[in-house]
Length: 144
Image (cartoon, rainbow, N blue to C red):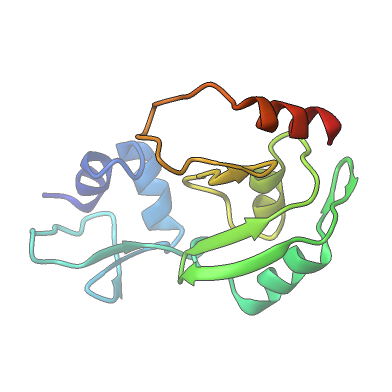
């Protein structure tokens, strides 16, 4: 199967979008740069990365604060969970802030998970489930 079709089936991008990733040199097949005419098999190792692995400089920038179009963000606590996974703890909540911060340092967000918000967690909830807030939680949110 052609590399662009493989990437499209994997949900990485459309076939035309995959062509752009390949041309930009962001796709490797078994450690070698992929080409538009590359054919892949199930046993091949295909990786898509140039923007996916933030370096130490990007993490330091996030930790100090990032200049966005609406001003400098407050410093964030940044922790690397895996080569292309980060955990950010913010102390302000601007519109689409995490996505804008990471895009500003050259690493667009592919997937975002908010594990906690204003002290509320998802603990004990299945994906897509919800629950009523406890009166003490409502009181704490209103006082914040």
